[in-house]
Amino acid sequence: MRNKFRFYAKRFANLYFLEKIFIILSRYILIENKDMEHEYQRAVTRVCVQTALLLLQHGAESTVVVQMAQRLGIALGVESVECALTANAVVLTTLSDNHCITTARKNTDKGINMQMVTDVQRIVIAVEHHLYDLEIAQRKLDQLKPLKYNRWLVVFMIGLSCAAFAHLSGGDWLITVEDGNILLLAGQKVTISDMTNPTITYSVVAPENEAVNLGKIFAKNGKIQMHAGSVVNKGTLNANSVHKDKSGEIILSAKEGLANIDGTVTLNNANFKAGSLTITGKEVVLNSGAKVELTGKQGGTVYIGGDERGEGKI
Image 1 (tube, rainbow, N blue to C red):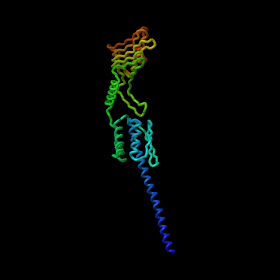
Image 2 (image 1 turned 120 degrees about the vertical axis):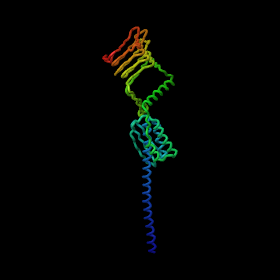
Image 3 (image 1 turned 180 degrees about the vertical axis):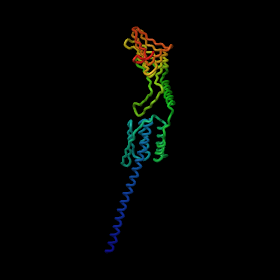
Image 4 (image 1 turned 90 degrees about the vertical axis):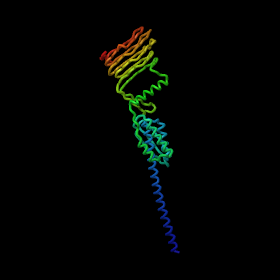
């Protein structure tokens, strides 16, 4: 009887020992699996934030940036992706099995490049269709390089686009504004920024700081201003008025160089004061073909001379 008791006691002890070993091994395997899951989630988070950053840097709309990051994360197996955008950063959070990982990346604007945006979208779509896994998607994103266009080609295409939109809107070479102001400004650099998304900017650098009018500009009862390093008028500037309290005004200001007048400049008011005309520059040239006319029942004001301090040449 005693021997049987010892036998069963040893057997139960061995079973208890094996059970403990099984529990320990199960916990270890579970921890290992959890670590592997968390490492995979971290990798998914990195590729999602890289996707969002590339899209934001190259001019994609904020809605597209968020949607692409979310679609990529869900396609790679996480439960949800939350993405917040600012002008300077991307903050992204992934959720998987009640475990959150949040990361942030600083945004550096690289200019609008729809080729890059399209390439990133293609990678996301390939992952959704199970053509790419996480490793391939990461490698494809790392290999993306923006296509650089010649700056003169960019300037030409921007000008062509503006001309096309102007034509579609019924525009031509004639600019007409009534009771308003027309300004022609020129500088070394022009930067355009989207007010709804300040991260989208585009800059055009000009070799010469020059404002040129070759067409016809009419500002009835208003003001026409041309400000630049040098000013050239070979077209028509007209600021005629018909009201007593709304006299026209034309200002041609060459801050650094030549004010070259070779077209027609008129300010007329048959019944009241004609208005005022100011032409300044380091050097002012009225060519033989120039016509400067200012007539009014009560006269008007004409100032043609040098720079703004009257020190230039005429």
